[in-house]
Image (cartoon, rainbow, N blue to C red; front, side, top):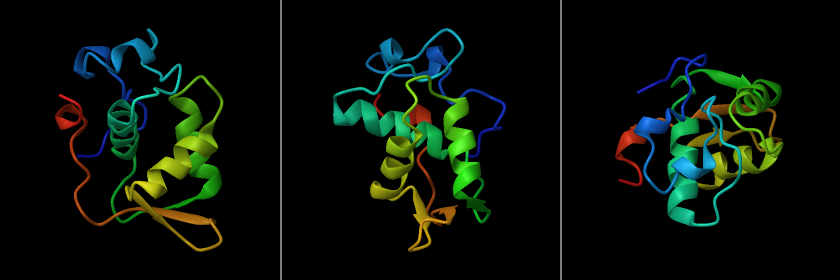
Length: 111
């Protein structure tokens, strides 16, 4: 599943009960959850924004992530995408790709 980058990955009605308090009315992540299960759901939803097989410059990754959160820590989100193996990156961090394995559909994470 790949989301339209213009669509919100955080449609409140589709988020788990645990993630909803962290999502604003515009469908943006407004704070970083403390529970890892909820963090993983948020990252899986963000990962669905990336097209499989397409390479993204770090700047493009930051732009996508900035669009969908309000707490101004796109570096944290980018690092979590990589650490939890949703994306691969060049050793110098200049290029990113969504991993080849299927990213779980956001609605199956955290429910």
